[in-house]
Length: 352
Image (cartoon, rainbow, N blue to C red):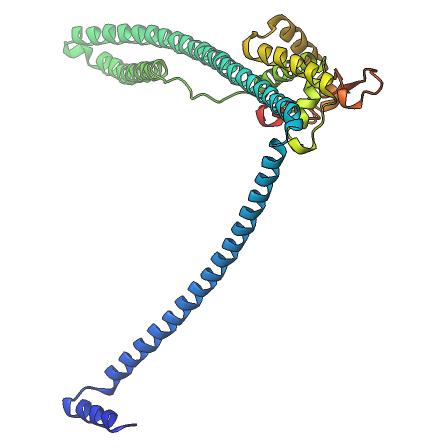
C-alpha cells in the first residue's frame, strides 16, 4: 500500500462512501477481467483454427498447381493430341447423354404430376357430387315432411279459430295440446332444412384439395421409362465401344487414358462424331422407349412396397463392345446393367 492508496482511502472515508459500494465496484472490475480473459482465449483458439485452415488451403493450392503443371506438360506433348481429343469428346458424350436423361426425367415428372393431379381432382369432384346428391335427397325429404307438417298445423289453427263459442271450451283445450308439439316438430323440420342448406352450400364451395405429389406408382412409372431410355443410349453408344469408354472418363484422368495407335484413334474419332451428332440432333425413339419401358415394368421387382427404384438384377442388361479388352482384332462384348453401374448418373436422376 502506497501513500497514494492511503490518501485515496482517506478521501473515501471523508466523502462518506460506504464500503459496500466500493466492493461492488471491485467485483465488477474482476468479472470484466474474467470475461476479457475468456474472450481472449476464444480468439486465440479461433486464430489457431484459421491458421490450420490456411495451411491446409496452401497445401491444396500447391497440389492443384502441381496437377495443373502435369496437365500443361501432358497437353504440350504433340503425341498426346489424339488421346486428349478422344478423352474429352468421350466426356462430352457422357455429359450429353446424362443431360438427355435428365431432360426426359423432367418431362415425365411434369406429365405424371399433371396426370395424377387431374385424377385426384376428378375423384374429389366425383366424391363431392355423390355427397351433394345425398344432401339434396335428404333436403327434398325434409322439405316434403316440413310442408306436410305446416299444412297440418295450418289446418288445426284454422279449426281453433272457428271454435270461438263457449261450448267449444273443452275441444279447444284438446286441440291446443295437439298444436303445441306439432308446432315444435315444424320448427325442428325447418331447422333441419336450414342445416342441410348450409351443408350443401359449404360442400359446393369447398376448395380443391392441395396437390399431394407423385404417388409410388407414378414414380415407378417414370423410373421405368428412365431406365429404358438409359438402356437405349448405352445400346446405341455401346455398339462401337463408346459407352464404357465414356464412363471411364468420370473416374480416370486424361494422363491415364490410352486409345490405341493412330489408326484406332482416327476410327474412334469418327465414331465419336457420329455419336455426338446423334445425341445432339436425333429425337428419342419413342416406340422403342415404350416397348422397353413395358418390358422393364413387367419384370421389375422391389424390396418393399414403398420403394420406387427396382432391384438392379430385375431390369435386365445391355450388350456393349469393350474395346479396351480387345486383342488381335477380336471384338469383345459384355453385359451392362445400367442401374448397377450407374450409367448417366442414374441414381441422382431417378425419383426416390
